[in-house]
Every structure is written in structure tokens, then in C-alpha cells.
Length: 448
Image (cartoon, rainbow, N blue to C red; front, side, top):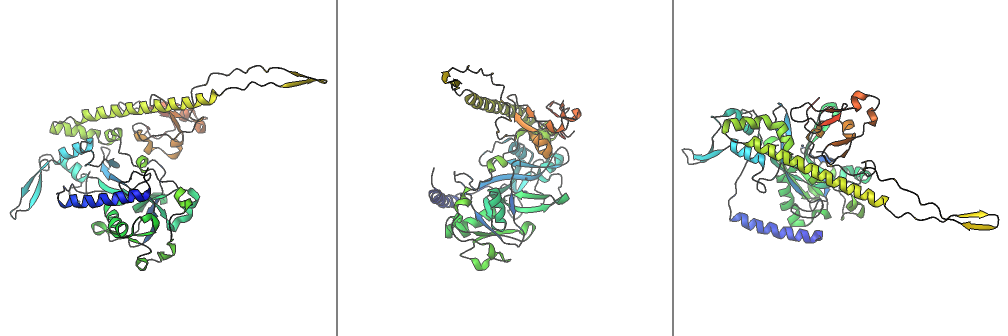
């Protein structure tokens, strides 16, 4: 694996090459718009309040662990249930044939025209012909809201950092945090974070910090958010070289020198796991009715395609679960098949010492491996409904069977059979079983 300095040098060379290519190419502008099942801690940016951090993630494009990552998120996509949902998309340039991109492009199909001044503009094919489809995708059914961006995902940049103002948290938890562009206070003092920061902040980091001063892991950086709404701007600068620019008395948090061994040992947030592309089952759950409407109106067959994608996804979950079960069973087998040493105890009879062979103990055949025996990190990303469960419900999920069903620990509700007994989900086509204590189906998300 390359060293960090080698990766830095490689990526800087690549950036220069990309600049040259960009100067000779035209680019297509697709548009804009604006949340995770792994424990993630955030450091949020406040408007006009400087934030001192040490960025630990290797640079965007690096193959080193914890590298800066781009994600594409629609924070508020209107679902069939009338509620908004977070949807994570793949990069259009990497996967242009992704299912939602195809639906998006079909509904928002357009041609180019020119006005009397010769300026080009888009003419959407379905805007006036099928406004109920067009407005759902283009504006989340809010056609008069100029700020509404509809389905189109916004690019965010994820970075693991040390929050200098909350340094004790890092020392206690031995983890890094992600930067958040904004934190919002909800009901009962719950805080909701928009993960990541806009690409504009990464651009400032590259142009104003990395290019003039080198690897940002060697010095603290100030991140600054200014303005509101569409006038919001983001800026980054080197704390030491531009210390006089630091505001709000934040100079006291600046720490000189390279990362310590302790800081280097702190674990990254696994952004690949926490920000997976939304499952096809969730897409069917929140958009299935609308997609059928698109098919009926435009003569497409998107819903059939979605059904096949969901079936394939479920099959892959089952295969992965079976693989994990086999690996766990192999581990248990290896442990239980260690050779049993033959013991030769000595029995004293008067002055005579007699040696006898102890009977060879017989071992029972290993029971099927139980999750409690080997603690494995469960990948529940394919189970759409898990995000709708309470923490108490989630704690009851302790394993995955090789047929994709879940293993539950109902000991906390064993005295109440109505909560400990398993029931089948009554949502059409689901039938997934879960304890009566569950507030929603972990498979499809149907609320009981």
C-alpha cells in the first residue's frame, strides 16, 4: 500500500492532468438539491462561526482507508406516503444506467430551444402534457417553490476530522467525526445533521490549503460558512499560515505539529457502510405506486425492472447471510475440534503411586452456531424497515439466518407473549416475520 505522501503526490499530479483535460472539454451541468445506520458523530458548521479541525481523511480519490468520499443525496424526496425520504444515489458519471436515473431522465426528458436573443433553454416534454408526473420529480409537487430541487441529488463531501473544540470526546471514544454542513434542532431536543459539506468547501480546501501548503494532516484548518440560502459560501484556510484570520476567539483551540500516535489510532467513520446507495426495496416501498403511474402514462416498464432488481437484491442478501453463517460455523468448528489432551492423573495409594488413564471424554456434536456465541457486525442495510424501528427494537435483532430471515432476542419481553411471539407482516407481498413488540416490519417498513 502506498504511503500517504506518495498518495498525495500522485493525486496532485492527477489534479494537474484533470485541469488540462478540463480546459479542452465541455462539461454537462445536470442541476442541484439537498441523511444512516452506523453510529456517526458530527461536527456541524455554524454560519459565521469559525470551526477549527484537523482533517485526518486521506485526499479525495485516494485508495487509503478513510479517504475523503463523495456521496449524492436527495434529502427530501417525496414518497407515495406523502412523506419525504432520504435517498442516496450513485454518481451519474459512474453509473448512468442506475434505475432512478433512468426514471428521472424519462420523466424530465427535454430538448433544447432558443429564445429571441439566441439563448438556449430546455423544453421539457412532459411539463405541460403530464404535469402530475413532471412536478413530482422536478419539484416534489411544489412547482411554485423556487428553492425546491425535487429528486435531483446534491453532491456532498465526507471527511473524517478531529474536532478541536470537543477533543475530550475523541480521547474517550477513540473515534473521529464527520463534518456536517448544518445541524437542526428537532423535537425533544433531538439534533439532526446534514452529513457532509458541499463540493465548494472541498474546492477551497484544495485551492487555498492543500496546493499552497501540502498535506492538511500536518496542520489545523479553519472551516468557515458565511451567508444564507443560495448565497451561502464556504472557505478553508491554514490556521498557522493565516492565524490572524481566525475569528470568534477560536485561536485557543489551534494545536501545532503533526498528528500524535494516539490521534492516528482513532478509528474512521466507515462512510462506505454508513452511506450506501439506497436499496431497491426501499425505492419500491416509497416510490412503487408512482413508478407504476409512470409506466401507465409513458408506456415504460420500470416497475417490472424494479421487481427484478428487488428479487436479485434479496437473493444476494440470502447468499451473503449463508456465507456469513458458514464462516461462523467454520470458526466454531475450528474451536471445538481442538485436540483433547489425554490426562494421566496420578493416584496415591499409601506409598505406592499408581498411574491410570483417564477416560476419554465424549463431546456432543456442535449445535448450529448462535449469534451470541460469536459477535459479528450485522449488515442490515438491505432491510429497509430497520430505520423505522426504535433502539429497543433494533437491539432485539441479533443475527441473520441463511434464508434472509432475522434472529431475534426477545428475552426483554419474554413475559408478554403478545410482544415476544413472531407475527407475519400483513403488507401485500411481504409476510416477513418479526416480534409483536416491533413497531414496523424490518423488511419493508410497514408501520403496525
